[in-house]
Length: 94
Ligand SMILES: [Zn+2]
Ligand SMILES: [Zn+2]
Image (cartoon, rainbow, N blue to C red; front, side, top):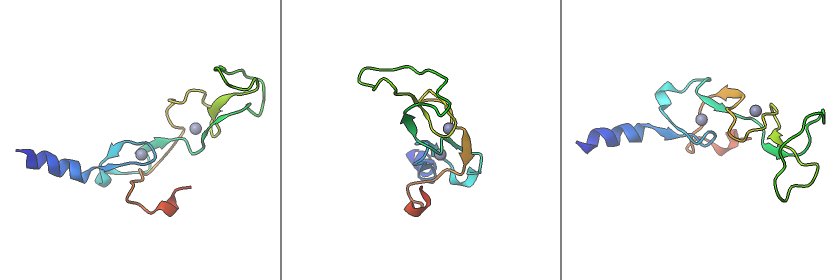
């Protein structure tokens, strides 16, 4: 009874980039959606837009993804690639 579910779970891997579980046999370049850059805390280059400040932020702080400028930490990724499991070589991570 439980053996079937256990086998299915074992086949799934956990992606260390998007923190989601995935089926390695269905892993494509479009499977993993993520931001290649970090969520940073500084001005946009154009310095024209304003961002929400929170307590403790320096007055010039801005929060956004450095890659695409998304201001929401939960914004869907702007890039897709293969999922990367924790089993994959660490060197592949940037
Ligand atoms: Zn992004
Ligand atoms: Zn992923």
